[in-house]
Length: 383
Image (cartoon, rainbow, N blue to C red; front, side, top):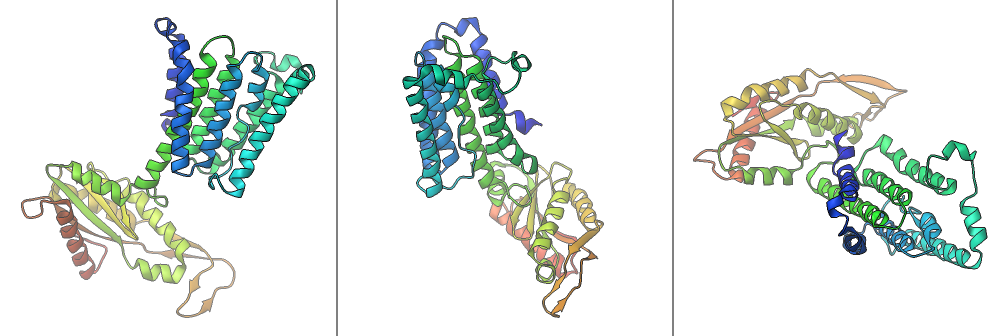
């Protein structure tokens, strides 16, 4: 639940509180004149630098809406412009897909401006045309076409998140909420601009969070990466213990059953290691190798907790589902088969001391202990 609220929901709540504080109301108009555009410019630079097409187009839409709502007589235009695109995966701005999206925005804005100037009465009537009985949605201060546009955009963003949650998708959800508040709060004053600026800020923060996770979280196992381990060890100045764990016979298992099954093994092992107790934290070190860091603990302190996770992996019945590929024997299975496979890990442990003072030296010592565990028969711990 917390990832859905922080930091995006917290930013939106902060914007709502700022608008309610009497002590700040005198300075809000001046703040609202530069805040949203400052966010849009900084966000556009980040989007261009990291090839985030969705972010760039969404910020463009928000900037157009801010300009439309800030101009006299352009409220209807703002309601149509807001949240019109930027729901597809990033593929670069200067690509056919990116140019097509940009063209869609330009065409839409051109049509809105043209019709609002040449036929303002007909345009206003079209934007106010009821889809459902007016009484059903009378409590919402938005015309029904705009309200349904928000509902469709929210549904399009929420649907993929049901299957796989990610910071960027959650950011777009909160940005839609902020844009909705901007239009429902539309009146002379800074509220709309501040809400739209906050929508842009939410998108920028979500992209930064996604970039951080890409660098510091392993996509397969959801464990922190080797880079995160290196930085964590560099921050530790006192005693700590590092354990290196390796899945036994993983290459042979991969060759026999396939990489998809191998990935499921890695996820199962990672899930067990992630629940290590004693203050330890698990990391994906690379391939089938994992690391567990125990800050402030000695080898003796860490061994009982490592033994617990080793036994947890060994006691887990891993079922192989689907077709079994045995390349060496060139056998083809008929139909769907299920087999139980025994998965075990070997662990090597070392601690920081006068002999191994640097992080690389501690890891090297743990690796040497891991080799001894494998030479002694695997599925065991060595120091």
